[in-house]
Every structure is written in C-alpha cells, then in structure tokens.
Amino acid sequence: PPCTMEAVAPAAWRRRCTERYLGMTVCRGCVMATLFGCISGSSYVFMTHFGLSPTAYSLIFAANSVGMILVGQLNVVLCRIMRLNRVLAIGFVAHLIPTLLFVAAVLTGAAGVEVVIGLLFLSMSSLGLLFGGLTSESMFSADPKILGAASALLGVVQYAFGGAAGVVLGLLHNNTLVPYALILGFCSVCAALCWILAAQTRNEYAGAVPAEALAGMG
Image (cartoon, rainbow, N blue to C red; front, top):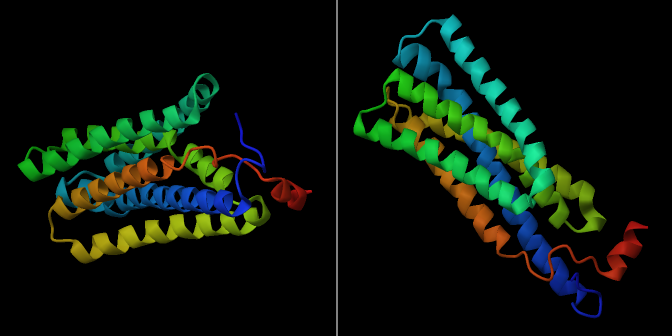
C-alpha cells in the first residue's frame, strides 16, 4: 500500500525520489548515447568499411528506424498487460544480447556485413522498448514541485550523452570496427547498470507523495 505523510518524512521521500530520478536520467542518457553512437559511426561502418553503396546504406538506416518504430508500438501493447519495470527488463535483455554479440563478433573477427546488419538491427530496434518507459520512470520520480526543471535536465542529459558518444567515437577512430563496437557495448552496459541501481530505490518511498507536495501541486 502507498505510504502516507505519517509513514515517511518528507525529507526522506525527496531524497529517495531524487536518487531514483538521477539514476533513471543517467540511464536514459546512456541509452541515447548508444543510439547516437550507432548513428555517428554507421556511415563509416557500412559505406567505408564494408563498401556498400549509399542506396544500400539508406535502406539499412531506414530498416533500423522502422524496426524501432514497430517495437515502440509493441511497447505500448506490453505496457497494457504488464508492469513497466518488467517491460523495461525485457527491453534491456533484448538490447544487451545483440549488442554484446556484436561486440564479440567484432573482437573475434566474425563481423561480416550480414552479421553486423542483423545484430545492429536487433540492437537498435529494441530501444523502442526503453525510450518511453525510462522517460516515464524519470519524470514519475521527480519532485512534483520541480517537474519543469526535471524535464529540462532530462533533455539536456540525454542529448549531452548522445553528443559525447559521437565525439568519443571520432577521437578513438582507428579505421576498424573495434572502437565503434566498444562504445556501443559500454553505453549499453552502463545503461543497464544504472537502471538496475535506480530500480533498487523502488520501495515505500517511490511513488509516495507527501501531503505538502500535493498541496504545492494544487
């Protein structure tokens, strides 16, 4: 049952919600870094490294976008039949498996063009299960009195992380797929770890709105 003002002090509630909000926000940023990192290096991967034509690259890019959209629609259906944290758990598993397989394929020299296309399609499409849920978790955890500032910080963090991933990829570029794979793998693992840590704060404080906070919203 949700706790009341008598069951938990406002200061403890705010501290717990702040911890959860920051964890989910950093997690969202890492997910965005994975996406931006993939986009930043994709032209090199497919056109320079594998020698595909611009048309073929465009079709691959479009397929990944369509996959993400379709999985996003699946996310809506799943959220109607199960709890959000379970949907996110499924999303992270669906994202980590192909991403880490891609890293392993690159490091072992098994990253042929078909393998890369397939694994990156699965990795990027699965992000459709994460974007909306992580945004919801972040905003739900924020103090109701500062939702505007919390939303602004969430936007800054996700695009700052995404931009940083592209910059790091450019700095580490060495005419191989290794930096590309390692950045995607690193960002994906960091996102999953941040989500796991932030989810640990889901206890009697999470979602409990003290009376004074409700009064402030009114």
